[in-house]
Length: 207
Image (cartoon, rainbow, N blue to C red; front, top):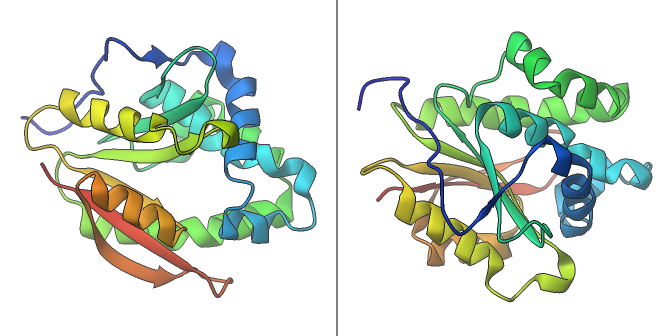
């Protein structure tokens, strides 16, 4: 496969989100990640903004990748971004509408998020070479968790990937590490998140 030709596959049997699904997607993700340790720390004084944490990655994936859900009810969703679009730049953020979403967070929250992602973005660039897909968000509605929806989204995507294409992700939950390991991912790095004394795991699936 030539460099910069990787595209996210169209997958029959899953619902592909459009821009009309943006607000419902944020609402669901805000509920799905409400107990996430890092996001709770960032939004501890402004919980009403919790869903806004996902505005940037969802807008970005709608523009440069694909987001899939089991159905249009958005019980769960997975946002996938391919190289070369994994690494953001200001122009891409503008074109995707992500800059406007970032502005809604406010300066204090924005600085904390930037500090966290500056380190993990650097790690990803060091760990991943060549073509790969970035799983930027995977969330399941709380009332639907434990029913296999997240597993189905990831496994279906894995089956539709071109040969020998890795998948990269980060997770802030040790419970999620076990979930991803069952799906064939391995931990490639564990770090303490800057500004918070909390761990994060960086993981790769290599078919």
